Image 1 (cartoon, one colour):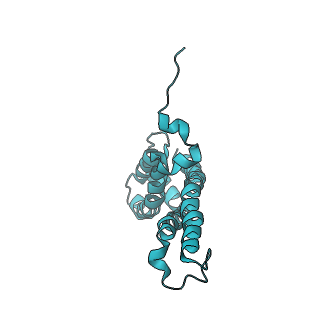
Image 2 (cartoon, helix red, strand yellow):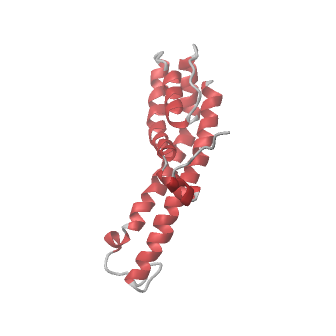
Length: 165
């Protein structure tokens, strides 16, 4: 029986440390950014008869792994998905945008902190405040956001599978 060999770097780091640097994580982020404008644009286009269901299904297939397929009633399904998924897609966009924006904001905390760091979390020293922001807000969110994105993408995927299949 053949043994599957993994690269040396994957054996050393736990999965939660590798997750922010995987392509799947960034595909989910791309879907979170693209789904709201595409879904909202598909609403009027589906009323004109465009195959918006196929477009939205292709987007979910490309970024979330939804099984590929075509349906003759695609404009109606595209309209339904565009309308019903809009609140979820907007929520996912806000959470994803905020969560990933927090990482560089806190890693680069000294650039935005100004001169008064005595009242900042981790203060009263500058080094303590920077360390706190970098570890909790920077590295902490870097490690948490892929898992939050995975959970939100699972809900989006289930909704897309239900409405576009």
